[in-house]
Length: 271
Image (cartoon, rainbow, N blue to C red; front, side, top):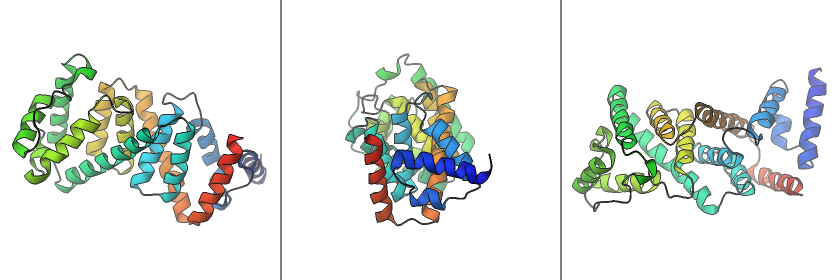
């Protein structure tokens, strides 16, 4: 099939679902469109991948929120809701993005030795695995965490050590830093299960890129039972989001027009 016929078929598929051809797809490289559209259909929109579509959409939303890409935030908030995500799950996905970005900034800013970081992470994972049941981690058995001294004591209680990058953070902020990390990221009782928070974290880390955070979220996701396939899919979702974000922001498409067209398309798809 020649390129023109391929494009005509792709545009017809899009029109069949959306009722029209969105400007962004029309502007996208004609040579790149067949492969990009095939990947989008066969992976991102595929309900039979290892990561359920709802969590793929939450990965997309989290990645989009910290690029930032207003187009993708708007779209994937809507897609997430259509896949059954609650407002709390949406808020948590964005919070994971914020947490990963914060720690990526710290680790890269202090230029922490990677082998030292890796050693700390490996010790934490070994300690957590030794508790036998991940959901019984002592995240609720909190000591009072109002001062840096109390935070360090609680880290040692919870993680089996005080990670060195926490020691590098200003003492005035370390209690709050630790509480957010422990009470949200480590908490198994949030709306998004722990494994999927870590897969969201990996997707964000992979495209920042932050090799510290990629290592951390890979190891902790595996601690929660993530498979190699799920790890690879989380990275691929992030890559796909970055791909389309670059396209939409690079044209650029008028945001008001994009939102109007998107709402029209979603209305057509839902019906």
